[in-house]
Length: 73
Image 1 (tube, rainbow, N blue to C red):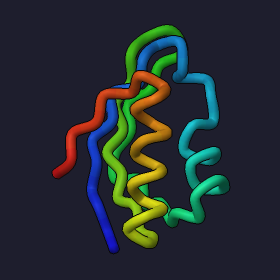
Image 2 (cartoon, rainbow, N blue to C red):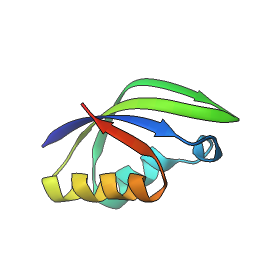
Image 3 (cartoon, rainbow, N blue to C red):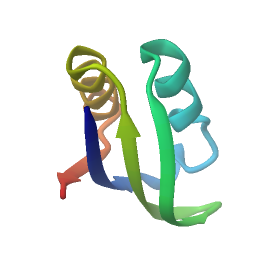
């Protein structure tokens, strides 16, 4: 299964390896389409993720728990 997501990342998390953690925790394969990240400002990432439907849902839930705004495209 593949999903394309647009993420709005709070400034407090722009220095955290959130994509890496999602990939390693839930066996998701990422493809970063675009990214705009600044050290002290909100960031945006457009990402395509591949994995089992269950793992993708767990990954999305993980991001939402971090207060990352997600728009599925």
